[in-house]
Length: 574
Image 1 (cartoon, rainbow, N blue to C red):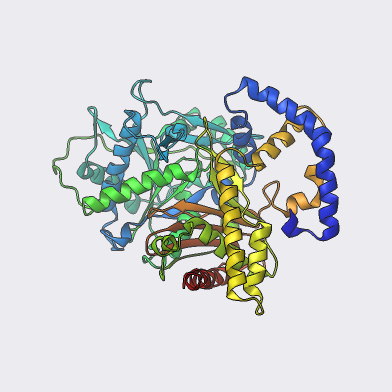
Image 2 (cartoon, rainbow, N blue to C red):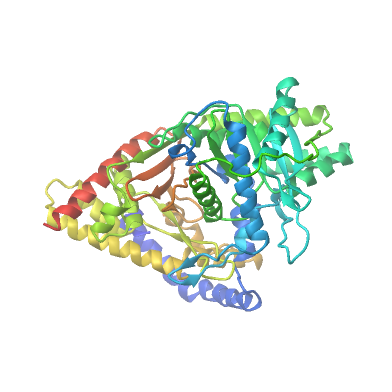
């Protein structure tokens, strides 16, 4: 908390923490230990509820993550008229991945020979969040072959209309030519006839309101419940989107923006995977975050990218098309009340998406290779450049969250790593001080690097503190005890506690896959990035209605910071 406090504030906080440590904190910790004795993962249910299922704000923009596919960098540059051909090939590869998980042929991920927990992968397909008045639930219909039959239908949404077809025929996955026929049928239907009701837009609503709308839908016709069940249990959703968000390998802004804020009548925002097919032959995806973390989707997308690259985006098998049943349209019964719900949802969605600013650019001066040559950690390098950029723009440190993965543990998900350390702040001050020499700047930089690496290792080893504090807070709530003073301390929220991080950041990985998220707080930023050998691709979001923040300004300062840091690391070796 120190970087965000005056001397007096910090002193007060130290007193509160000491009191907590010997008093109520000690009692709560004992209760937590008791809970941990009865569960293999004491946090699992709590995390799901507190971070996702009890949250009432609309998921689609605030919780979901979306992103572009990288195919335009190799086989599939934007080209109109290719979208269904390409979509059928991408869908076929996606179905192969589903089959790998279903037949348990997907190799466990490893970190230094240590296998990671793969439980979240069961949530990638046939999974959907269902709204509740007070709390949502996750319905997962997926089964491995050993466990029994698994749904194998996909849902296609186009122009506000919903269709479904089985992706397996006589035990065999449909081939790209067969999938092409099914998708073409849907597209032709939608082009010939008027737009649908766009019931899917309800998934973008505030959660309690969507739950009420859903209850009303079911009450007017039991067939509506059957349709909802069909969508929920489907493998995934394919959205045929008529926009053409032209993008390039250096500027992914349009397609990323479209993935995050596009047409809500053609996405089922609660599905664990929505594949977005754009009319210019580019692709994206949007996913509900509750059932799994981004790394699950990254693995699927990286697999697709590699397969498409290897096959040059072509289908080399048979062109024969079996007599597969045509897609069936799923038509909801709607009344005036449902229509008013739909109208309200569209307005709400439009207002909130209009407020989002997003830039997604590739910094191409250097990447992982140049950083590693300086014997520095690429992720820490980017994180510190982000800190420096933020402090240059805002003249003060910002509370910052970086995702740390805890999949070394049973059903592990994430821990918070807090990159805005006192060491990072000291280094930023040195960088901005014209009287400070290169040697002092370099020393301060290495101290900041070491601190960051140490905290990240601790977080991944289950030795972070944010989830532990959450546990202490929730056990007090569960036992009906008053909220401890620690959590009421103004500095607790100011330093990011309770989900108040100004910078919400994550390394999406060292692949070609990137995503984006909205900022956690009104005066904050979402900052996601991927690091390649020769480039660093970054997506930054901010809210336009906040006068203090600007995503483009932060990106420009970030580029300058990267350049300065490499220069500093280079002169240090002379």
